[in-house]
Image (cartoon, rainbow, N blue to C red; front, side, top):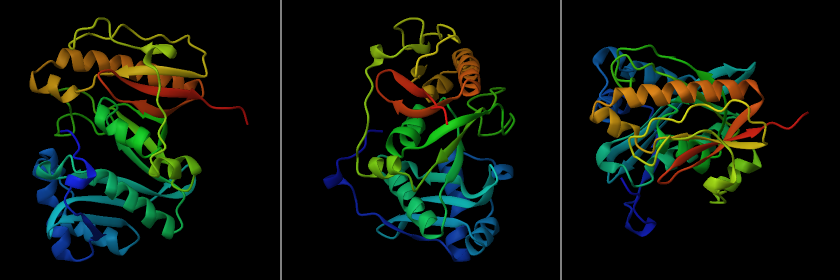
Length: 281
């Protein structure tokens, strides 16, 4: 869905969700947004205790109606205390209003006020729109690939027997790069200017990947992903999903091991992760 211009967006109010009544709305929201089965739902009492014991639970409201929420809890990452963001959900009828972005920036503000320097979360690397939000809009980074992290056989899969591969996002909420993104200072990348570790084989929208290139040593490289993987799922093109997932897994796992970090994302008719080699310390 195309985002509305700011002057056409409804007014959104974001506040903490602290009461049990607030928390009881959230399981139904999970079903509407992700289609979760009952066994996969986070229950109201889990949200309630997390909010009381150091978690961040924020809701976005339009004219008093819950439009979406973001949920994180205290965790340990690389030996340091972080907030791990487990849910970011926006109801379908409110998508395109910039609510997800607003919730993440509000989460950042709360995390900083509570003394945190980093927020983490996982997401499916084949979801281009999510990648664009996480890297290009918010300024997150990633250097960890988690193959089949949640197992198969749930609504978290892109299709039957498709592994639930995930990227582990790191959001350094106090760094200048993140503050620049909040001010709208975004970078752009010419598709043809950087070498590609992964790209599509043909110009067809249903193209297979060309195959990984694992010997690149440039400071910046690109890895392509399809712009709309959900469309393949709806058309039962699980062969394409599996092929792209397997090759992207190989590429990212390899280059993470070579000291590369995903530092940005290019979203358009063709979509690319931007991987950058870390400077020597």
